[in-house]
Amino acid sequence: MKTKHTLLLLFIIPLLSFTTHKYYLSLTQLTYKSEAKSIQIIMNVFMDDIEVALNKDYNIDLQLTTKKELKNNDVYFERYLKEKLLFKVDGITKTFNYIGKEYEGDLVYFYLEIENINQVKTIHITNNILTKHFPEQQNLVKSKVGKKNKSVLLTKEDNTTTLKF
Image (tube, rainbow, N blue to C red; front, side, top):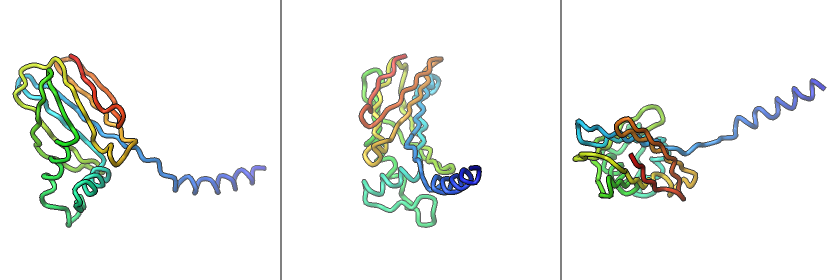
């Protein structure tokens, strides 16, 4: 009997090692900085997912973190983020400045900023990052305004929220 269990485990373990379970998740962190009168935004997404999305949407070949990486990739990143990520602060549509990006492991971190914000009572967010190509994509939004923290998980079907402070 013990031999049968051992053989069964030896058969099942290799099969499980070839099964992949992929998570599709981005994190967007919003922090209101009263002294700078701005909302600072850090977003991280999986590098391979954003590369697939941009390559398909813009008919390009980014080849991130290789010697063949497109030199002007920030143009595509900024364009994509501005198409897929929308903000209203206290009911007024706001555009963000694309500050830049950096790679860390298998993630891309994007740095954005909404300037000239005197106070924040509500932030309305629409986040469609990666949902066109990855229907299972979930976009976690965490925010901090003063001492108040709020978090919400957005999906393809439920891509909009209003955070009240």
